Length: 541
Image (cartoon, rainbow, N blue to C red):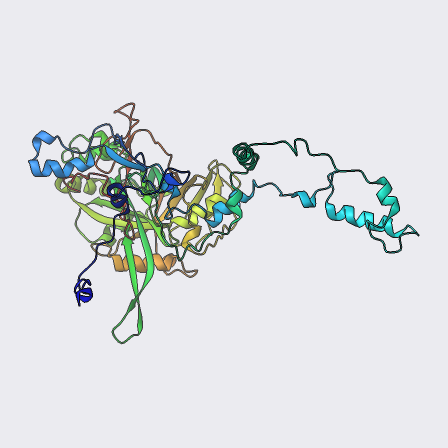
């Protein structure tokens, strides 16, 4: 009866035994011996190292602690305190650490020498089997040895040499010295990866897996540098403002309640807008009453975009704006579609009238903007085409609505030939933005803005239509312009670079140089990383 009373109820949870605590509180009963150290918990296993946290900007984004509430100060300190790194000296000896993966096993086996054992080796270096075959052939050729065995061959017995005598064979040697000699011989010439021949365990069903985490750091995807060089229209009557942004357009699937699969078009903006100004000083002077002197941080004409999940559906969308004026966008864009630079003398009076109207709108409504035109560039098509050319740099001209891959290649501002750069890739794994050759693009046509704004649904339809061979957009009357941009992989440590919070990144030698902006990324999918960056909420952003 007492036996049942001592049983633990099934509903009561049982805490597992802490092995380290048990070994520390219960002395070992085993006497001193060669295996005692295998049962003892090493006291020097854990090592704590404090690593200073690196700040990639000249000034920290975290505000001064004296200006904050004590509770907020404690929350913000996680962005400034040094890293406490806990190292375990004997971590690799545990069962949860398995370095014998398939790739590492193949790498280790490359250095393993060919194993030739004593039974397979002959005195002259040839194999024992070859020697036996040669002896057998010679024995069979002798008449007095019909059986053909080595032992029965008188010729072989007369020509055989005795084995070398073993020195000190009968000497009396202590057992400890023999064990020491055997131990030295076992360790001599032993390959460090001898057990690399053992097959790696199945990674899908590990018994235990422990990994050493990396020190948290700021997340960056594949970085792309875009430089805006020039923007020119057939007629120049008013200032035009431009912006760049990355969009990821793909077809999503949604499961309905009746188990039927519905297709839903989706488009996601994966970066913030990068605004740049390529207007001449004459055009900028029309807005001086409304625009204060520009700060150096607003004069950037190059930007670094980060793409964590590159795919075949990433587009670089370019939008143009102009000063707000009366009438819809179609009426405002009509002069840019019918007037040409070559006919400037013939249309001089009309151009003067348009400039006078533009100056009036700039004086009255210079603070306000209206959508004007837009275009898009299939980014992965540019990357694959530029990477396949056998040149250091590439200059291509892109017309809006042109079929994927059919662009004319230019070099040194002269057409050297036309050929199709049709490139097809399948799967997101083929999207690499780190090793393609820089390309200079000339966007020649823009689409007129329809309506007050360009909705995501309309933009997705346009982007999907641009990839079709018979694009509907190609039949529209375009706004002729020339926007030249450079696209290249971003350098590892660019100079004169600003973070999305407009903080100067090391190195920044001169504050008067036109900077390069890092554009904040909006990943298409979640990125699971610790919060290592303190973002400042900027006014007007």
